[in-house]
Structure formats: C-alpha cells, structure tokens
Image 1 (cartoon, helix red, strand yellow):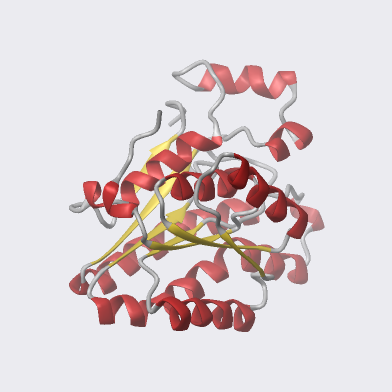
Image 2 (tube, one colour):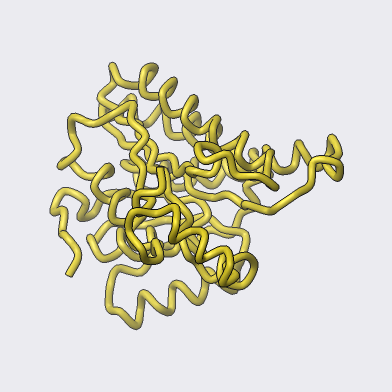
Length: 253
C-alpha cells in the first residue's frame, strides 16, 4: 500500500517521458493519487499500453500527448493547450531522457547537440512554459529527474552525464528565481534503476554483481521507488523543501 497524499487529488500534473521506464511508474503513482495527469512521450505504443494498464488497475486514466521533445515549439504549444483547457498546471515533472552509450571518438557535433537536446534542453523550456501560470497562481511544484551517473564518474556516456550534472544547476537556479512566487523546485536523483530497457541493454550478471558491491542495499532499485520520492516532493508534505537534489540510489553514493 502506497502513501496517499490528499492534496495531490485533482492536481493538474504534467510528466515528460511518461510512456515507459521510470516515467510510466511516475504516471501510475500520480493516477493512484487521483491527480489529473498529462504525459508526453514520442512512443505511442508504450503510451497506449500504459493507459490500458491504468484502466485495468481501476485508477485515474492519464491523458497522453504524443510529442517529440526535440521540437520545442511543439512542446510549448502542447503545454499551452493544457493551460488553456485546465486553467493551470500545478506540478511539472521533467523526466524524459535517454542514456544512450557513446565513445568519445565517435561523437560528432551533430550527435552532441542531439544528446544535449534529448537530455537537457527541454527541461528548461518546459519550466519556461509553466512559469507564467504558476506565478499567476502563486504556487507550483517542479521536480527535475537527475542521475547519479555523473556523481560516480560513469564512463561511456559523457554527454549524458554532462547533461544530468547540469540538471542540478537548472534546479538550483530555478528554485532561486521562482521561490519568491511560492514555486518549489527540486531534483530527485536516481541510482541505477532497473527498467525493462536496462534489463534488455545493459544489466549483465557481471554488471549487476558490481552494482551490488557498490550499493548498501543489496537489491535492485525499482522505478516505483523513484516515483514515490517524486510524489513526496510534489505534495504539501514537503512544503519546506526547495533547491534540493534528493538521491534515491540504494546507498550507492
């Protein structure tokens, strides 16, 4: 049984990258709270599957928006439609990312720009797009999803770790700029979270054994554990928390 936060009921929540992985768990957890959930994802099949799973669980049904987050104009237009239709967005969860591996010698200027755009740029413009309505309403919550990858010096994904380290800077700057309007901005920082994608691509027996050596808790970190932390930082139970980066990593760091 998950904790219930009564103040999250009927809140208008926008989640980027909500179709699969950690994002789908975030969507489900907010739906369990009775929030009005919108999620953005480019993967239509995964997103439709998530909606069916929510129906089967008899929880609130999320609203899916197909959008390529590389297209900032399209992203901003979709956010504007939500605000025009609902009058506000109470909570923004910047989650969408892609931890594609890459070798230093293979990176081109085009690839660099693409990875930064996938993992960082839309975070800024999503916040920019909800800023005005949150200021008008004198309240709002923004949670940016980070990663411990840069903290542990993860190799083989330099652009991803650079982008994720920048999430901390964005979070702290936004918290400072928006705090006077009663808008809280925090980051939840996952460890190696075992999604289907991680299992398919990178979770070898050797990698898992090494992970267990590093973690204090000798078990897999699951998407629901990240989602539950995000719920807390989205609710009034964390009303005094802003400008923070909260690590959920089974004790790796």
